[in-house]
Amino acid sequence: MSVQRRQLLESTFVALVTANDRLNRAVAAFMKTWGITGTQYNVLRILRGAGPDGQRSQRIADDMISKVPDITRLVDRLVTAGLAERRTDADDRRVVKVVVTASGLDLLARMDEPIRALHEQVLGGMTSRDLKIVRDLLGEL
Amino acid sequence: MSVQRRQLLESTFVALVTANDRLNRAVAAFMKTWGITGTQYNVLRILRGAGPDGQRSQRIADDMISKVPDITRLVDRLVTAGLAERRTDADDRRVVKVVVTASGLDLLARMDEPIRALHEQVLGGMTSRDLKIVRDLLGEL
DNA sequence: CAACGATACTTGTTGCAACAAATATTATCC
DNA sequence: GGATAATATTTGTTGCAACAAGTATCGTTG
Image 1: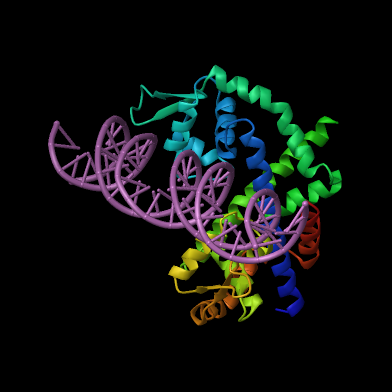
Image 2: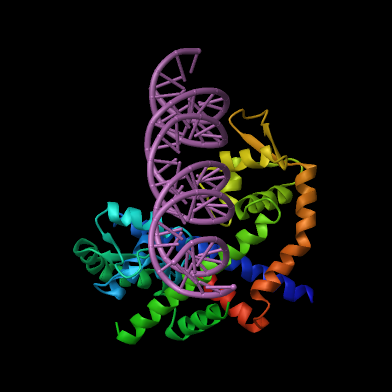
């Protein structure tokens, strides 16, 4: 491999990690103003999408954008905060279904518009053409 | 703002966070085989660049790719692992200079080639043209 | 030159993430 | 149908990150 190619790989890698950190910080700071973490928000969104029947823990883990191995204590915090509830499945008593509460839905509804503003704040400077390029190229990773 | 633009912002945001998580995992798994974390590696690289005089804690914090507020305990772990040493500055006794040890330099040297392989593993699938695009667009964030 | 603020780092504390082991329930296979 | 494997979740433990408060040293200013 050429020296140029290696340097390009490295500088792109560093750019990725740097953008990574900035994005994490922006998300964390935003979520903090709402009293939750980005991970918790992700779970709440999954639960809202799942509807009144809720979603089993394992499926929540599968659907999450950022994977976490410990759904139990993640849901614990949502339950403690009154944003979600646990319901053991009657058909399969191993399964725990997690349901978003009215309070959780209310929080999500209030966050919907600010979340769009966050997207705008982070990515609004890019043209739609560039957004598509970044999205598609990152999707290949 | 149009619906399309909003959806594009959202899907790109999700793509970023997803790539984020995958990258973090790849780096963490790689670093784990060497007994350190990505953050620790970043500090060691800074110390290698600083040379035998070492680098003061605050400057390390400034130079890091992923910012961390607690350099003290980060360096603590490097010192415990025998990869770095602390030396209080004689001119200004508030300042602590951190120096990489021979063991630390040896570890870095052994990692240099595998690190390039990691870059190749993560980004090798992209053309040089696309790498430049991603690097430059992410740099604007 | 003494007091005050600024600087550089450390320490205390809390919460979350990661990994492994344990528990409970269900499915499978002689 | 009872032993065994598989599945779903919980619990134990450790380490790291974040934020705030504390300590030591230095610079500045009247």
